[in-house]
Amino acid sequence: MSESNPRLSITRLLICGAAIVTLAMGIRHGFGLWLQPITQAHGWTRETFAIAIAIQNLAWGITGVLAGMLADRYGAFRVILMGTTAYSLGLLGMAYSDSSLMFAMTAGVLIGVAQSGTTYAVVYGVIGRNVPADKRSWAMGVTAAAGSFGQFLMVPTEGFLIGQFGWQQALVLLGFAALLMAPLAWGLREPGFAGSAPPARDQSIVHAIREAFKYPSFKLLMAGYFVCGFQVVFIGVHMPSYLKDKGLSPQVASYALALIGLFNVFGTYAAGVLGQRLAKRKILAFIYIARAVAISVFLLAPLTPLSVYVFASVMGTLWLSTVPVTNALVAQIFGVAHLSMLSGFVFFSHQIGSFMGVWLGGYLYDKTGSYDIVWYIAIALGVAAALINLPIKEVAIARQPQPQAA
Image 1 (tube, one colour):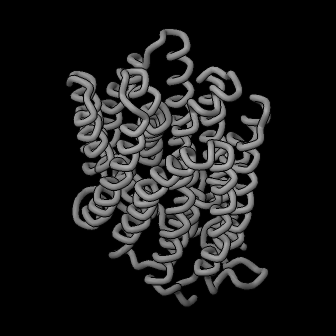
Image 2: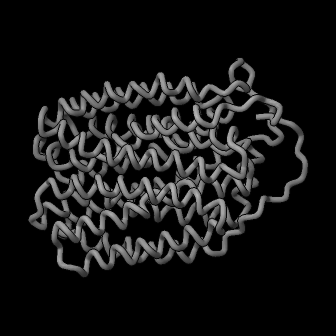
Image 3: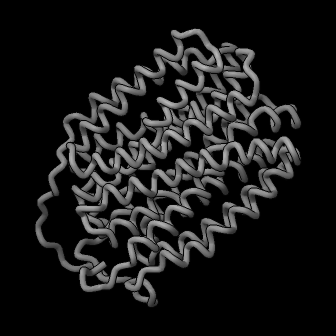
């Protein structure tokens, strides 16, 4: 978007963007609560449920790149409307799927597509174009904190709905709740995208992609984000079942997921603020090594409700704190013209990690009767991600002027 185009009000942008992310991420964070009710109702294995959620994460990552391209070219408003519709239909389909294939298509493909159009890459593109660089990391932190508050708010709500209405009716109610994102999307209509012709760019999509993938720091950022996806989705989906297997009540898992969401409000906001002051690569390295330490201590300590809550609080502080820092770093290096698209590519790597984390959790549990191996993998990957992020160069990329692309 040209600098001459008017910008959205930051207050309006943050309120609407944060509310959309709250709903989209809040609903998604509670899917682990459905693992046992759905598998028991249909007689499926945990791997069947896990593969559907793994497909969801992969579909989210793949279509996130396309959603980012469309949002950069035609504005976030239209993309969010399409994502909202897909989200509602996916939840309804998830409720009434009577075969593993249909469940994979609805809970997996359809909701994955929906999330690509209603979450960070699309909303952060609007923030990048409308918030000055000296406030961008902070604004992204506020939005990420909203997604965390959504987890704190929605996970207990989803647990309550399952308890009161049953797992199937709870999904139907969430399907209607997802439609609330549609009116909120109106607040993200950007003036430069109001007409049929998209704003001119100083760089074509093809050149932007080539430039990013030739830049070593972009590849390092993608590699680190793979680990983020592996860790958080494995824990988010499988920890409720892990705790139940260990003899703890389902309420402990619900409270633990809620604590992750609550403490992530503070963690993501703090990461966004620190991203304006400290080297972002060092923030990311600290987050990943701290996760590895937290998981190690959790596995070594006696398992009690208190230890679960402490672990959830620590992991919550680190949970999505990578998101504002990573996206602000992409904007800092490459600019904001193609921010949603480039963030989509980085997030695709995150979702490959998510696929591996949730699928391996189900697969190795069914093979070994334990989650131990996946926990150990998560620790090793955390150490690797910390080392991978340290060499990243944060300065804006030097580029030659390109012919203006339509």
